[in-house]
Each structure stands twice: as structure tokens, then as C-alpha cells.
Image (cartoon, rainbow, N blue to C red; front, side):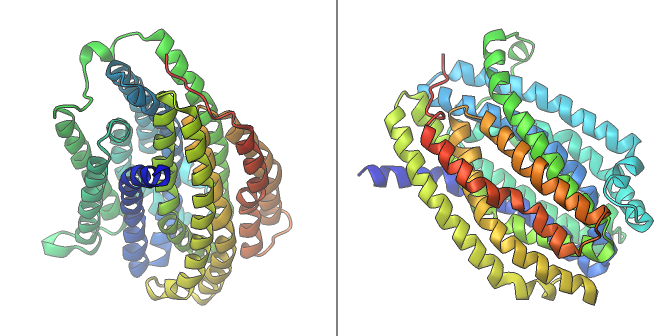
Length: 445
């Protein structure tokens, strides 16, 4: 009976989160396929340009994850007023972050692109994309605040519905504006950026409208300017380690893309395709981390610590199963990737090597994401992630990849393998930390 209850709850939480993750990944797939069918450089340049949004998302995820951790526990406890206050804290922080990235993309796009490549062709294309897509970055943080609080307050299916609808609209607009269908001008990368911006406006509008339904959390101007020192202190206590870990991981992961961008246009293009396939296959992992984290957090907030511990042990087994399945799937789809994009012979050969390396990486990605971002974060145990990234990524993977790129001039596949060392190397540490059960905590007041 305990297993049945667990899997019923997990499915209800994980399925909407997985669908949402999948639909978001499909936007990147659509961009890659449509732009890749037009020109290899356009696809590579947009992949490099979207690293700016990737960094923004890393910061936003740190903020919204803190809202998810505390929100899940207070929802499990049944404290709706605390949930409303958590939403407003999250909303204010995310709005400030979004504004900062919007201004950066508007006034310093060339500088941002030079961080990722020295190929002038790619820089020029990327700048066009950033100038328009910056408007979508302005709205992302606000809509993510709404979607996060909807997830933890029992409205997961509606978050999946909003995200899925937004993706369908984005893909359709991509096709219309990139290729110039229905009498619209053929806009290429600028069309892809405009499609994303329009979609974000519609997504935010849907979130605001939903929030006025009964039982939902919505903006309250009195709450917006309210000072909640104790709760804000709790929020920061959870958020700061997440932010530290997020920045270590985000900047490190972005540097990997930069290394590939500095190895030439063929390596950058192959990396673009690999990243799209990786994000698609990781959707189940990301959905399980979100759903599993909320499930464990609800039990912790309700004071059922032994049940939460038991759920955590079950999630570890599921993590390994998903990791092995992801590896098999990566190997299976490798021969099919070249059927959908135009690549040079050199880029094609590089792509096969990167996909093989990625298949091994998938095991570490699944285990670490579900345990660290799901189980550990549910109980506010967020410092471990920062420490593990500091050692595995910044003391091993990043230095090796940097040396291979700029000093020893290794082949792209070897440098890429160095960038994947951190996830695989963390597995034993993560399992040992799990057994300490520091994450079994009720953080509600």
C-alpha cells in the first residue's frame, strides 16, 4: 500500500513537470532544426547567444527553487498565508534579475557574444538575435514565479498546460517568421527571437488570468510591499547556497560552450546539436527531480520525516534506472541526428564523438539531478551542491577543458569529455551524502 501511495503521488507530480520540461526543450529543438536547415552558422550562433538566457535561467531557478522548497513544506503544513508571502518574495527578486539581463542584452550584445566566440560571423548573427530576444528575458522571471507557486500549490497540470501551449505557439511562430510563411517576411534568426518574445507575452498573460481563479495565489499590492523579515531570512537561507551552486554550475557549463565555440564553427555546430539531444533526453530526469522534490517536501512539512526518508530511498533507485535508460536512448538516437540538420563532414564526425561521450554523462546527470536538486533541496540541504561543484567542476573539469582548448589544442571530443567528468565523478560523493540524512528536516515555523 505504501508503494502504491508513493507511485500515485509521484506520477501526479512528475508527469506534468516532465511534460513542461519536454515542451520547453522542444523550443530548442525547433530552433535548431529550423535554423539548421537554413544555415549551420545560424544554428551555432543562436546556440551561443542563448547562453545568456541560460545564465539568467540558472539564477532564476535558484530563486524559484527556494520558493518551491519552502512552498512545498508550507503547503504540506496547510499554511496558505505563508505561501502567498513566499510568492511575493520570489516575484520581486525574479523581476529585478530579469530587468538586469534585459538591459545587458540591449546595450552590450557584442560584448556578451565575444565571451563565447571569436568568429565574427557568429558574433554578428548572435547580436541580431539578442537585441530582439532581450524582451522575452524581461518577462521570463515573472512568469516563472507564477508557474513555480502553481506547481507547489496543487495546480501542476495547469503549469504543464500553460507551458505546453506556449511551446506550440512558439514553434508555429518560429516556422512562420523564420521561413516567411503566410506572407510574412523571411526573418531567419530574428524571426526565432521575435517568436520567443511574443510567446513569453502570451505565457505571462495566461499565468495572470489563471491566478484569479479560486484557490490560486495571485499578486496582492499590500503583500508586494510587505516586509516579512523572518520569512525572507528563511528564504535567503535556502536560496543563497542554491544561488552559489547555480552560479558555479551555470558559469562552468557556459564556459564549456565557450570552449567549443573557440574551437571553430564545426565544433560549435556539433555541440549545438548534442545540447539539443541532451536536453530532450534529460526531460524525464528534470521532471523527476521537480516532482520528487515536491513529494518529499510535502512529507517533511507535514512532519512525516520517516515517510520522507522512505520516499527518498525509492527515488534513488528510480534515478539509477532513468540514468541507464537515458544512456541507452542516447546511443540509439545517435545515428539519426544527422538526418535533420545540415552539417559539414568535419562537424558530422565531431558530432558522433560528442554523442558517445554524452551517453556516459547521462548516468551521472540523472543520479545527481534527482538526488541533489530533488531530494536534498526538499529538506533545505543545499550546501552540498555548492561544495561538490567547487571541487568536481572548478578544480577538475573546467581547468582540464581550458588547458585542452587554449594550451594543448586537443581535439574537440577530448575537450568535451573533460567537461563531462564532473557529473560522473560526483556519484560516489552524492550517495555518501544521501546516507547522512541531513536533508530530513522540517523547515516550517
